[in-house]
Amino acid sequence: MTVSDRVRVKNVEVLSDDYYLLKKTTFEYRRANGEWQTQAREAYDRGNCATVLPYNLAQRTVVLVRQFRYPVYVNGYDDLLIEAAAGVLDGEAPEVRIRAEAEEETGYRLGAIKKIFEAFSSPGSVTEKLHFFVAEYDPSMRVGSGGGLADEGEDIEVLELPIDSALAMISDGRIVDAKTIMLLQYAALHIFK
Image 1: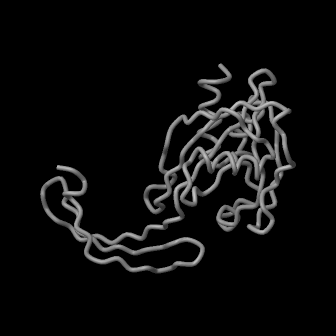
Image 2: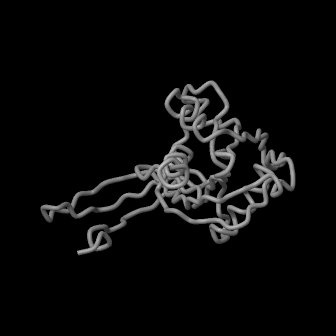
């Protein structure tokens, strides 16, 4: 039996279709004991995304960005968020989109990129699946200042950090973004060993 055999959608209601899509779905779910149970869940569909960690093995550095994120601010985080460059796919292949996002946000035009895994960001309420990448960079790949797109509300600071400093920033609470923590942990285990 697949999960599809255990779900019967009864009703889908659009609650908001502004910046992204919020739906409330009522469905029946067949429990492990065979009983059908009616449930209702809200799901926020913001689209799938890609993220990348540029790294320089010789210099032992990584490139991250720092920017304002309203959802974390309203949840009590009173600082700019340090994170890996990322963006919504907008119908493009993850490899294509992440190259454009990296250049827009960091100013680096990356060469070879490597996909390392995919993960759901918050599966209890958000449909988003993230495509994770790493890519080597060097100073010659800097083709702009980065900073994001002002017309999209982006005001991004580019950070080039030693990997050890970035990892310490997880421990002391200066890096609290899940995708960035995952990428830095991957780098510590597989790149900067």
